[in-house]
Length: 207
Image (tube, rainbow, N blue to C red; front, side, top):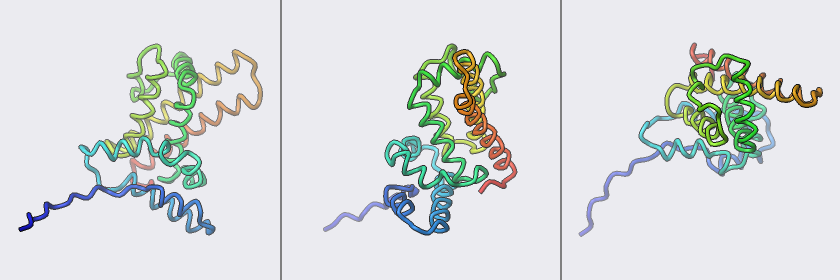
């Protein structure tokens, strides 16, 4: 006699290798854009379970598992005022921090001396170390599924803005060049884009 099967609990599906391969390999830009938007909507707007740490962990480490190039092929061409464009900028920001956490910590520390630090990133230790900025980057990405998405965008924007100020002062203290100034400018642009997207999210217009 067989025991009755226990009910199965289905986790919300997340984009995996198959999703990314299908999108990256597609030839039709319209199809690629539509799939990118669907994946982004699933990540941000999908069913939430605050106790499901496995899903949150998968989101934080999505670029580690799929590769940043795969995510870039999927989302990097999306407008800054879209869910897909926001996710690309959030993953790009984390990738930068993880690529050189010592430099990210140093630039963030420099920036705090020249800009008022928004309360959403004020909890970082002083002076911040590589582990501190890595934790901050991960905490920001966790906000995609835990908490309010607008707050996530504002927190990422605040971090990028302070780091951009630090990068600009660091570069000017060394040997300033057009290329290095543009590097800081691009980080500031990211901050402005994330902040604008956060305002759209507050009014229900981010999609």
